Image (cartoon, rainbow, N blue to C red; front, side, top):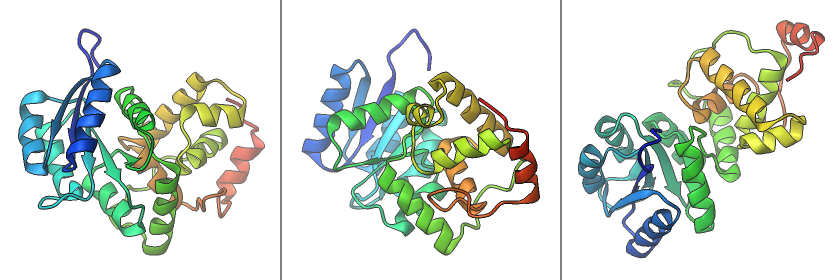
Length: 236
């Protein structure tokens, strides 16, 4: 994000009280916020407002958040799209990924948690609520994902470890605590992972991890190359 202006956030939700409340809180936290009561209005506003982050409700009458997401990406190509949902069903999560959402916020979370998710997205760190990450794991394992990204270059043992935590919905600080390294080290690992896999965000990287054998608690299988990587005993 540029440093000479406030981060712009567009909230697209048909529930008036929730939408206006989230907008007001975002403004109190220093964001330049705008809200829209429908997908159609949000798309029009995105063209003129040029948001950095768009928070869109998955379940809206008329145009749903999933239907609106690709159109919002066209209207504001530089924006990060965060899907706002109360449901974490396997099918809905996978549909949102395919539509182009880069993060997922739960509508029943505290408003302060939603603001934190927006702040993370504005800083380039996509938010994945743990419950949504669980649905993502189940969905890809059960149904597969024909639209998923191709297998990229081999990751190091530490990068695979970090990717596993990303697939579980952990943020950089949580991963740093688990691996006893700094958050900046984790950030560098994540950047290299995205680059190697040729993906745009953590959600796509998590999908890749699951399709390659991540089962929610670790890597389900170990290939010969994995053993060689482990033998090198790479550190952060």
